[in-house]
Length: 222
Image 1 (cartoon, helix red, strand yellow):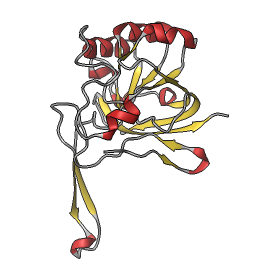
Image 2 (spheres, one colour; image 1 turned 120 degrees about the horizontal axis):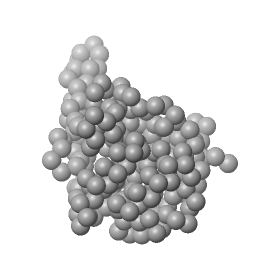
Image 3 (cartoon, helix red, strand yellow; image 1 turned 45 degrees about the vertical axis):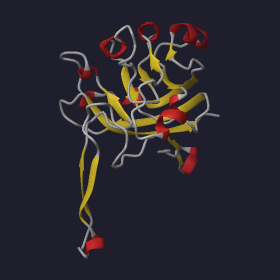
Image 4 (cartoon, one colour; image 1 turned 90 degrees about the vertical axis):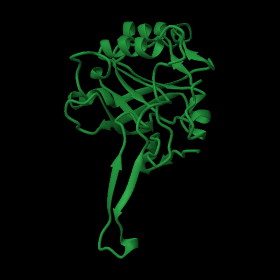
């Protein structure tokens, strides 16, 4: 199903995938269940809803604890990691994000880098899992760590792919999270052009947890 980006005031653009029943989740994760347990439609005096889902559903963040033993949990996220200037880089490669393509962008220490790929206009069109999504290779992950990037964002459910012949899902997470490079996964950047933006992204304050759903908004920097 197509998910639409929503523009709000002051030119902020919402790149968060809406949470809803039936949406795609990572294989094996719990399906999203949103239920209006009390509803004015049933002649009750107020609305009260219930939700059941994994913390890596839709647009979410990974904390180091996701793959790193004794790593930081999501409640320990420093605010300056996900609030501030960010750069959106559009990847031309249809298979993966490779170090060779990143070398041209002069990526600097402390940057927040968000990758727009073919995932945004293609993978979010369906509620079925798209196993052939564009992912970050081990080489690109190490390149980003060596450059000193503090935040990496991607436009599908994982930075690494289970189909990567180099065991990319685990190894890519290990490289990035092991360097305390925090991750945003599951954005829809279809309405976003490459360039510089102000970023606001905050997780829920879930204690001792390795991830959280987030709301991500971007504002073009002119």
